[in-house]
Length: 114
Length: 108
Image (cartoon, rainbow over all chains, first blue to last red; front, side, top):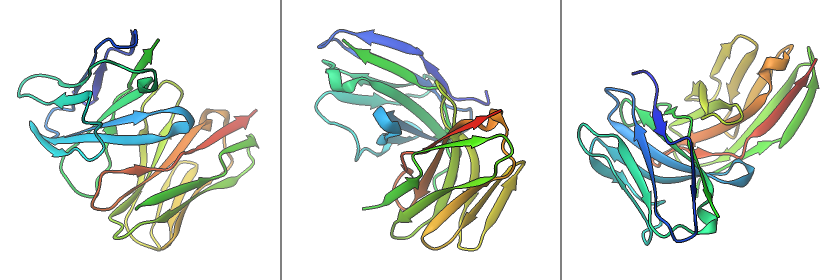
């Protein structure tokens, strides 16, 4: 399709529980990006993939966060043992190719950790 | 480290009152500057890409310009439906780095 599909739209987890977010990029787009948007519109880059390979993971908190993009499946971002500070909107974006091109964003998953 | 600063944080305009939003950047090796619009509860929606100083892009009531240090998003005769947060982002050899946005409210 022509949109980046993220599910679920909202997710509530108790502190210490696992959270898993999904992203289906636009068909034909080779690059997938995950961003975390916290208060005051701050966008923090987490990780990017080129097809199923990690392309850049410089923003990824290594201890509790993991991500995958497997063939013929939506990409996923998983947070083990969530903490209150993980509460944010997580956006996925896709791009046709690497380089100075704009990304197409999904509508985001709002994660609330209580 | 790449830095993007947007001003003002918030802007309130009367319908028809033209204004400009500013995005100043400090990067090494700019590969592109991007403007996005974000509505509440939605993801950023792509507006423009600018690649080199002097470049200008227009779309309806919006016009984006780029210099070596900053970009402006000019809004001419805005309407209430232009109310949104406008985000600026830069691309170097790293993924997009975003500013914190300008929250625009246009009052009828």
